[in-house]
Length: 191
Image 1 (spheres, one colour):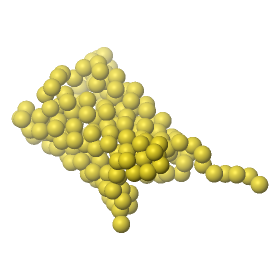
Image 2 (tube, rainbow, N blue to C red; image 1 turned 180 degrees about the horizontal axis):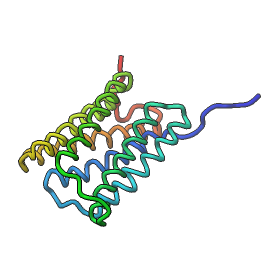
Image 3 (tube, rainbow, N blue to C red; image 1 turned 30 degrees about the horizontal axis):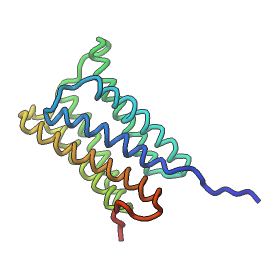
Image 4 (cartoon, helix red, strand yellow; image 1 turned 45 degrees about the vertical axis):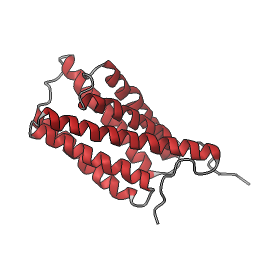
């Protein structure tokens, strides 16, 4: 008899932590704590980008379409964001103007809104992550489209920090709950 049980680990915490840590760091910049720098770009490539794509591929292997779509998509979001910055710095492309960035961020907001609808079948923690990310993308899109004040941009950064920490919490909750075999950090079940 062939045993086909899935004995692989849960890749979701890797994806959530890659997304969350990178999101917090970028939004510390957006909130005005420091300039955009190599640390943010490196996190965008390595942990926000590559680690999420790896987590998405692992979720595909487990047959989890939602997590595959989310992690690979947001991993490629981070890689595309860094690519836009680097392509401009290297002189390979013209910098995206505010309207183009607003369109880019708005489309990510629409995608995230639909993904948020999917979280209504998951846990409350996932709803908070995707709900706050939807708001973040639309705030960022508006900020670029309207050439918003630095105060609005800083507010948006704080919302992004909240979003990132909600993903960190969700990832760490999954790690600790699995490790201890009981609820250490609740995720909030959907009834």
